[in-house]
Image (cartoon, rainbow, N blue to C red):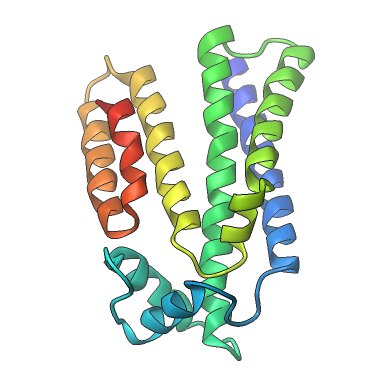
Length: 200
C-alpha cells in the first residue's frame, strides 16, 4: 500500500510538472489572433454559436464559445487558448497512459531506478507527442484536432483504468462513461471514433 501511495504521489507530481512546462511553451507562441485556414471559421462560429463546415462540430463550438467569452482583447485568443489547454491535457494523459501500461507490465515501481525508468519513459512520450509538428500546430490556433486528441487520450486512459478494476463492483460505470465520451466526440471530430475498435 505504501508503494502504491508513493507511486501515485510521484506520478501526479511528474504529470503536474509536464502540464506546466508544456502549457508554458504553448502560451509563448499561442496565436494572438486569427491564423490561416480553418481557424478563422472556428473562431467566428464559436463566437456567434454558428455552424462551421461539415460535419459541423457542434460540441467544439459550444465549448469554444465559453472560451470566446473570456475577457481578452481578442475573442480569437480565448478560442486559441482552448486548443492550447486541450493539447496540454492530451499530452499529460499520454504520459499517464504510458505510465499505466508500464506499471501493468512491470508492476508498481519499487526502487528509485524503476521509478526513474517509468516516469522518464512517460515524460518522453508526452513531450514527443506535445512537440510533434502536427500536434504543435493544432495547439496554438483554433482547431478541432487538439480537443479531439484530448478526448481520444482520456478514453484510452479510462479503458486501461477499467481493465485494472474490471472485477470490482461498479466497474461498469467506467464503460458507460467511455461510451458517453465516444458518443459526445461525434460532435467534436469524427476522427475520435478511431478509438472505438480498441474499446470494442
